[in-house]
Image 1 (cartoon, helix red, strand yellow):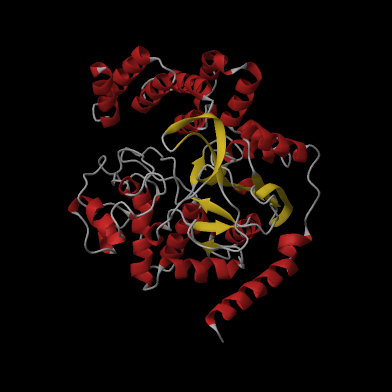
Image 2 (cartoon, helix red, strand yellow; image 1 turned 90 degrees about the vertical axis):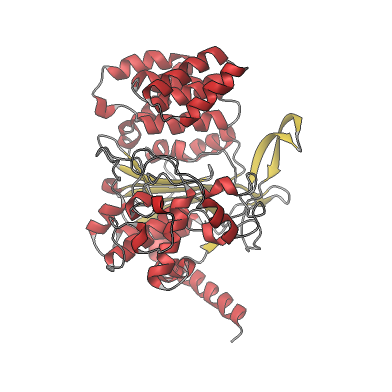
Length: 491
């Protein structure tokens, strides 16, 4: 049989299986009262062009909803079969792939990467597999060598050239001492999967996850690939071709994910497929034991024993009750799982800067009202929206009177502040969030570094210089702070 005809038949068969699956469609329920209006409000405020949503509860898909446009140019609506790029949500699949190899006895999370990959620079060799997964390796980021606009290989021309150049760069910091989100970590994990299985990681993902679950809309690829049913992605810009625009303008997004980077970012999917995958993961169809699933969702450790923000391809969301793990991608897509509540939400958009992760806890409240109240960051966000961001330092005083376990974490505040600052039109709100973060975490060099950047963004140069000096005083190895001080003192 012709190979292309075989693939088409395989995909059609998978669609039939999915449509007949009671797990996918047999338990669908109407949206809770008010949820539809909530989602439409989020779309309007965040200027989301298209949204696809799935809610999983008690091992069943309870809700599938699609809104807006998959293609603005042709006024094509989003449907439940529309395929979205999920960007860094891909990392959660890499985490599962590594844990499958751990269960098979082929990979040890505590082993150095040099056990599996022979030719590496000396500083790279002792980094453990777990340290790659949790982004505390200190490795230089491969993205620095790619086209900053498309993340394509055209700057150096080939994977081999990029990889050779990367290995000449110095480490960013001693392994295990700091956190730095880094694509190189997941490139190396892909190479480990290739090496220990003797197969390309894309094939391993397909055989061990996509085919096991039945995920017809799951496909590797980027803007260069012709993918049937895939949405067009968009973003708003204020400059184009080096010139300022009269107003923010919607433009098409073009992005490349070279094949060797696709353990970090490179999958496309539907919310339905992702919901089925979450169900399979929790029901033991992808990992054999609850212990393995627990390891997947357990944060790593710095050298001093403190927990990192990341687990194995997932972000942890520490909170007193209603524990959550999540993964986000490209400021467009997010998956959040509440293991003890048997609840999960998948939100996919085609709008850069949508940050759906910011409203998922609130959305979960329509299924369990206790969830958003359990998350310190969500509770804080709701208060600031109601009282005004200028009340951030007043709120900081109130938070300080509470048990520290109920505080929003520094990482959460930092991520939120940067989302506001980079989202367009919210630099003042971002500044207030960073002021609050520095007030809650006055011994953090990173808090003052971020506050300095926000002050600069708001034209407060002298205050920014003071914050950078505080940051460097707390962490003399803060190279970003040192460069900012040098730049500001020369102006």
